[in-house]
Amino acid sequence: MTSNLIKQNVARLLAELPDGVELVAAAKTRTPEEILEAVEAGIKIIGENYVKDTKEAYGVVGKRVKWHFIGTLQKHNVRRNVLEIFDMIESVDSLGIARGIDRKCAEIGKIMPVLIEVNSGRESQKSGVLPEDVEQLVREISGLKNIKVMGLMTMGPRFGNPEDSRPYFVETRRIFDRIKGLKLPNVEMRYLSMGMTNSYKAALEEGANIIRIGTKIFGERYRA
Image (cartoon, rainbow, N blue to C red; front, side):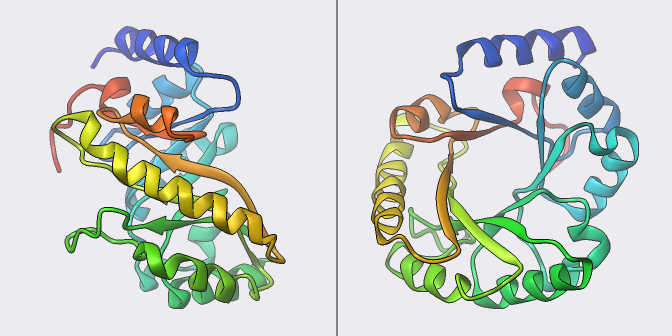
């Protein structure tokens, strides 16, 4: 996509978002040059799925924006030089991953904000913790000193009728509100990250204050 179209897409999205909603540009498969165009158009947060791609893009863009990890974080990627880049990890779904983040962040003197990824659709092919297990995981993570739970994240179907996503979002918002009411130590339920290009309008209606948009900014992907 040309830089002018990226600029137009970003401007259109930012203009329509309600106050208090943060836009994450989902940069999976995008080149560092495309990401830079989005940043220059007004994007403040870049969401990356892969560590290798993040390093390449970070080399071009640097700290001009915040960096969120939105993919499945493998244990071998929980390294100091990776965690130094990210400002938030949106996809924590196990105590093991959380402990790895906590341990490495302790080495660099950093407290990492994280979101718990909820598999609200109970889809076997997707990562995330099942809805009934979210509260227990949050309680376990709350005892870690170098990690702070800031909310929840969930996925919706990438294609199809956007209304198919709504039950996922309703369920995740219900869990979010319940955990927020518990007032657990070291847990600040501030962010509800839901909705992508196909489903973000439904997500906003159900309480999302972070949306992750790729195609509507950059155009269709050319590789998986």
